[in-house]
Image 1: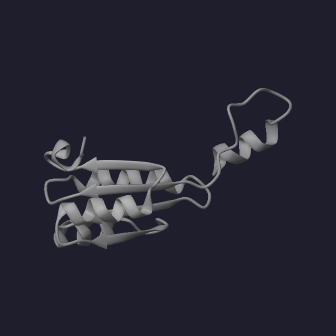
Image 2: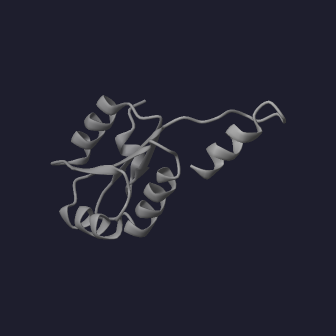
Image 3: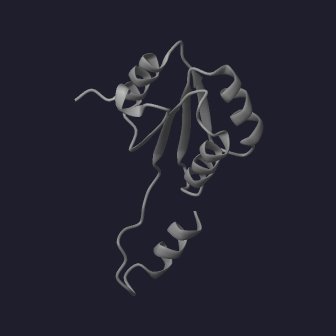
Length: 111
């Protein structure tokens, strides 16, 4: 939010890359994912005014941990039956930014 405002104030006086608008981040994670890393990335998304952060996971325990640590973050946690369903949900959202934080992420990516 602060970076966007600073860029807005100097736009036209100096060259800037662009004034970024709202963006969305989707993280696919499972029980092997580190909740501290997930929350850090979700918080980083929160610095974009109007940004949205979404965790998609098949782990109830991870969802509970992340929820407990993520006060004030604009977003959602989606619980799925398995990681394949998580990928389907992420594809429907079609986010600007996608992180796959699972033990074997290549298994989820179709060539």
